[in-house]
Image (cartoon, rainbow, N blue to C red; front, top):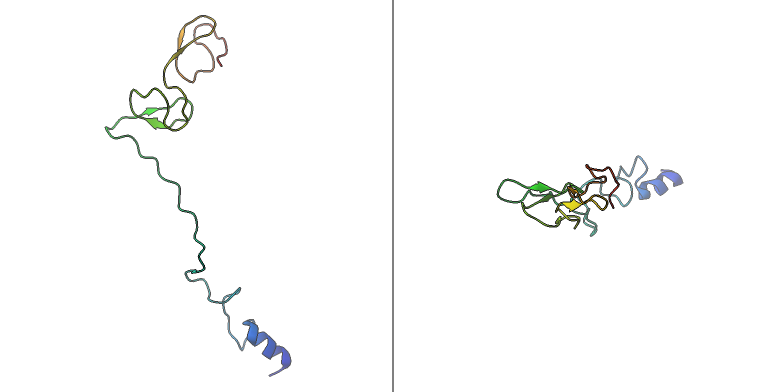
Length: 103
């Protein structure tokens, strides 16, 4: 055995030492070095009772009659136009009566 064969066999890269799976050896099995992948994000669950109301801003489901969205905190109640006082749905960007932009 040559000098290089001996050197490489100790590192796991030669044909005499076999394949140890790369960095640190061990192959692709389960890791037990304390590192864990973060858990997947929670799956949204619709409110019980069958029907939920979608938020006009973020589309998050809310219980019927909610005044504010439980996901983004924006108002779920209809408002009024700042120019003509017409009733507009929450989240509308323009008044359906006069067309003025809403804040």
